[in-house]
Length: 127
Image 1: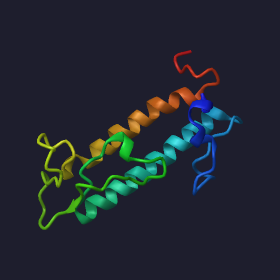
Image 2: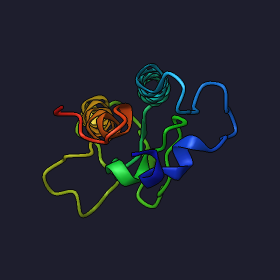
Image 3: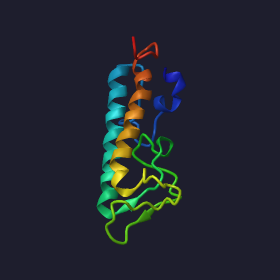
């Protein structure tokens, strides 16, 4: 399964925490997921403390390293408003300030589902 996720097997800027090798694969995958989740939680907690709203927290805008991309519709609150979203196309409020922790959690769960395939040698987590 690692052949399908070559960047997981290659060093990153923090290779010790975010690298999967064939030795002890399930533990390495677990550790990568744990570290990515920890970093994501720290990032969104920091955002919440300063009133930052990303605006588009799709899974493809979040990285294993706890960083995000696509800051097109981001913003900072002028005053506290849990429903604030700088994304003018987010009519449902999916990415509003108060939903950011839940969106990040949801994205980490999707990462866990994807990494489950890398955790087992044959690439099938159901076996």
